[in-house]
Length: 363
Image 1: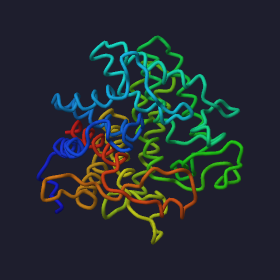
Image 2: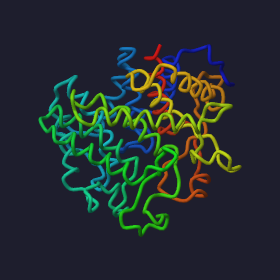
Image 3: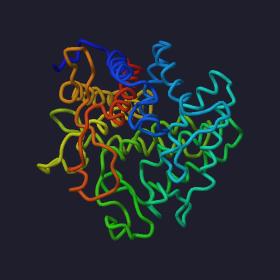
């Protein structure tokens, strides 16, 4: 059963998405179960935004329980120490520390922060996405580590982390921006990866990676101190990227393709998680004044397209978001379009909740 758009507000939809997964999983069993992992981190960041908007304690409690089931009273926990992805759930630790002043959250956050001292880097100083992908920077990594690093530095007296993150963004843009204003999935400084082009960048524009980049650049600006030299530069970056995105928005549905700029290919498809992330980025840019209010129509069209084409509510009132690409590395066109699709994958439901709150804030 596909519900009509007018039956619920964006906030209602965000709550339904969160409530459905809350009913299905105890916090630590969110897939992949019993792990400190960015899949859960993205979803729970969306849930945290729902809590901030509604002040309904069940959402805060669910987020807190996930963290508490993995971190002991001394701030010890198991996490992957060779990848940027492990840092992303740290975005849950900082607000929990502010709310509770419990030192375990600060101690755990410090462990994640120190990954930035030990992770491998390119010759230019860019973080490898993971040790198993030597000399590769991915767009994904800017979201996985950037917001946490900036916020940690601001809270705990390391403002230089802001400049570190801004340098990562500069390197990503330098090596991955395409002539059409979009960004390739990543690049390999060594040019040894089987997918690497002559310039070293990925061969395709993958939706969700570009979604992470669009979301995080829209978020970075407000994190920077007033007068920071990067604020105006990033406003221009966001405006140019939004303009490029709406050029490739599907005219009929308002959604975006798995390989964003190849919608004319018959085996390409409209993918949900990137469509949510682009919706978020455009709505956020409008809400913050980085683009004018006329751009909101593109975010609204995309959101309506998600509800009409990708969201299903079953006869028990449960939320289902379809056509979410599972976790994906860098590859060729055929690799992207033949990756498995999932329903209610946390990449998608988290992005949907985040986008819903931005649209709610635009009202």
